[in-house]
Image 1 (cartoon, rainbow, N blue to C red):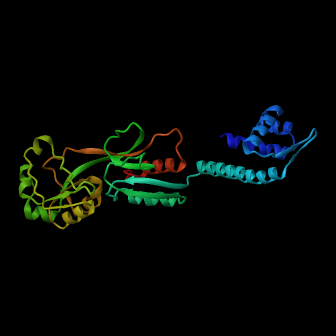
Image 2 (image 1 turned 30 degrees about the horizontal axis):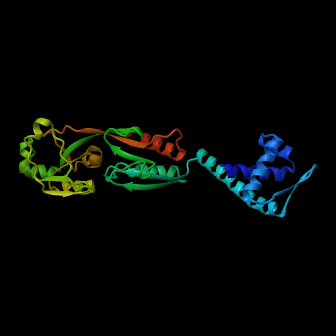
Image 3 (image 1 turned 60 degrees about the horizontal axis):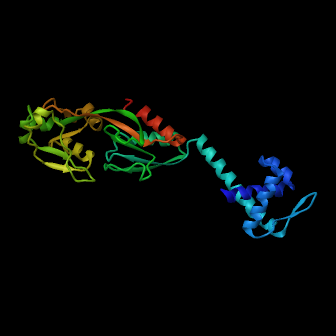
Length: 294
């Protein structure tokens, strides 16, 4: 800070040609400007200005130093203008953390990119619990209630978990009437990519104790589970938004029994800061307005 102050003071002295005029521009007395110039010369170990009673003139070293100082000040001005322009219009890189399953979000991410072409999305798909601040994320999309006080959040919408199977599978194997019936069915499980653990089926508490779930297949993408279920290969447990199309066209059927107890919310989470960059603000507003809107 002291170096920058000295550079600015010296540049003003050189431009104005007098301590009084330089002080007027800087809001300082002529005496304060003179002392500041003297400290700068002492620190550099060189005389920068020839002083006379009427006017100041730069030494050869002063002219050389001024050229460098002016470039530094021009760069500072350019950086400030660039920052101010960035604050006025959404632009720049946005690092976004997303769940491994992208079916719900990808169409809306594409829509955002069309509306805001100057915002470059850096998309990271991962189901692990990331350190939003430590890993440099601007915003993440996650299910479950926010639990980090350092983060701000906005709810995107709610979802339910469903047990689904194809009409062909149910015609061949029958529909389970209770949790105990699942033991004789082919059960298709989701496996978390990061941990390798299976996602528990959130059956109602009184049913969970009775359930014995075979593992007929497990995979780490919801798309693969949907494809296996559509091809009559078993029962899968999936969020309702991932099978919306298959339910609408009849490729899959939601089972009434056994009961599934879990529902949840999806949130946008970002580091809580006093000033939000425009690129982040418009991303949050766009996603909140479009995801779960239909």
